[in-house]
Length: 196
Image (tube, rainbow, N blue to C red):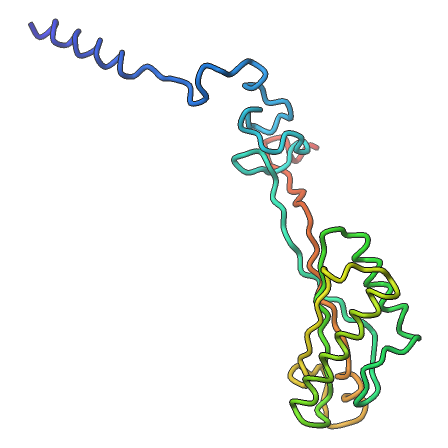
């Protein structure tokens, strides 16, 4: 009797444990292949052409990351002024070239002042300095205005002492924070990685 009961239980368990494809019966052999050899079958692979040995996620894509680059523009301003002198256009061009060479990147232009004058007037002046650089990028170098933003920080972030003329001149500056989009080229490690 115990043997018959055990056989019935085994038959019931085996019929319940039959596995069905999560993709149904519609898959063909091509969809079960891994054409780019990244370890993810074609039917699940959202990025079908990943480079060989790239580190990937569960859907076969490698990470995209945004890198922040801080670019100190060598552009100084006269005290109380926000006009960009023509001698500094080559500095602005370096930033424009970088933005053109890296599609998908954006830039925040930060304006700064020394501590001469009121805090409110310095904040307004620093905004005008940042906006002046943005205007040069747009009008002289055809950079898309939608990827640029100017922010004025006034006298709140000095890089030198405001106790002398040299330090104050260094504080009257513009910095570009560039956010560049890039795809991580990280390779997976395996037991043969050292030999490659």
